Image (cartoon, rainbow over all chains, first blue to last red; front, top):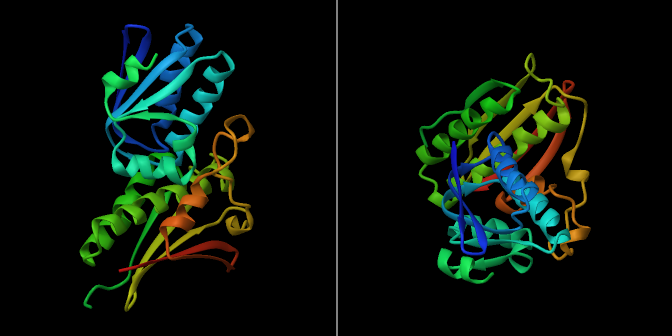
Amino acid sequence: MIDISVTTVESATLVEVSGRVDSMNANQLGEALMAEIDKGNINLVLDLAGVEYMSSAGLREIVSALKKVKRARGDVRVSQPSDRVLEIFEMAGLDTILQIFDTQVEAVGSY
Amino acid sequence: MGVKEKRLTIPATLEKVEEACEFVSNFADDLGMSDDAVYHCYLSVEEVCTNVIEHGYKYKGDDQVIEVVCQPQSDHLRIVIIDDAARFDPMVLNDPDPSAPLLERGDGGWGVFFVKKFMNSVDYRYEKNRNQLILKKHF
């Protein structure tokens, strides 16, 4: 089960996720990100402080959204991933593609 | 050791994958495996079952099953995941490239890769018209 909240802060759109992102619910994350992108909100901060678990299904949604915003010259920047989520990013080489921040403030302020 | 083999059969639907993950991770936990090892087992079972449902049964597995067997061995947990979809060896897939630029990547394809990284070994067998993926995780 995941909770997703979306708020506009300064020049970015903050997407805060909590729970376990797995094959059962990762599509909810994908739909939330795509809904913002479709509205033209392409400077996204994905705050993962509350995500204790993410499988490849979650990774797939993030990569898909990232590709879409990059084409529009936007970005998906990640804040506060747990060690386990960060490990998943690193294994897939996403840590060199995604900008990852220790705090939400830094991620929002990077835009 | 005192812990015997256990098996669970679930309908081949995404809604039931968590049940298989919990079954295996509880078994691993009861064996005294570390938190990291239990987590690695959980994630691997999710990835394998999801692949079977998506690519094997093509999301039409409501009347099909996935069988999960936990077998404690002297120095590792042996997890066997069995399905009746068309014969397919996921180990023949090329690993995705973590150094690939973003726009040259597929969106997904990381599941089997993670399983290979998190398990000590992964082997495929086809026996009695059933796919069997055998995962081993050391204590």
